[in-house]
Length: 102
Image 1 (cartoon, one colour):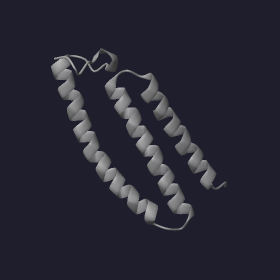
Image 2: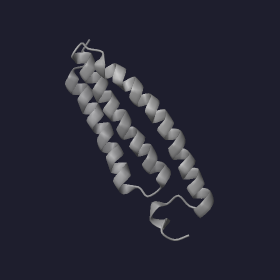
Image 3: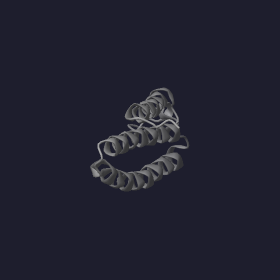
């Protein structure tokens, strides 16, 4: 049975990050952009856990717990902002939003 190496984990994290970055740059729906940002955050936590595992230290894994806690609060606030924006403007398309006008 083959074992995964640090390069495998970092390749997966890099692919996830690139996919999220592509989604942020290409998509215009704020909900999809927000999900892509969360995908990028998940990719960075995967890289931290991989470095922690292969260095035989728990520092990265412990730090990931704090990142996940902050991400949960960020999701709650971000989704509340998107819902409030939808209620006020009627759309969540980023190119249709102009925050300088009422």
